[in-house]
Length: 99
Length: 145
Image (cartoon, rainbow over all chains, first blue to last red):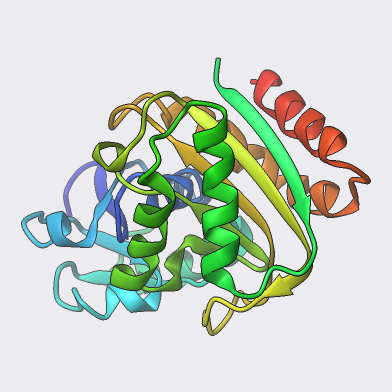
């Protein structure tokens, strides 16, 4: 089960800089995949009280919230739209969440 | 409209000095308080080197309540990179520091910067000859929005 539109959370330490840049990249990548999604950014502590379908962040943060969402995507380059699109395509496809 | 400044440095010893130097530009132009540079260092010490968000580039910042006064953007290019301890994105030679007075004032500016970085801004900053040219490149990128 997933929410409609897909709820995506980008996380970082402070929740207002790096995760905001990742949010931009994620929005572009999800648009490429024709996925209707709502993307929010936050810090990893606040993230624990949320219920997203997808979490995206660097390993040092996603390892803190491994069970927060059905899909957890770990990226090292927050500006790599093509790389993130490929990772999301694979992960969302596994869940049957691609249009 | 955000305040913009830029500098180049040689001989920066480590990531702490690089972070402090970039954030001090924000203090010097009045967009952050004296305590802000150390707060930016503390973010990395507490949360890890995640601010190195793409190869070679760090987004230096702290929370608004740590000393953000006005929206400001500062670029520091190191002629001699430093290691942050990031397993994928080290070493770093471009630091983008920003300050924001609240949780939302910076959103548009950072979104614009993200787009510019996606179309090669970091490499243009690496090729820039002077601090003046660096400042011009960032100002142009922000005005393009």
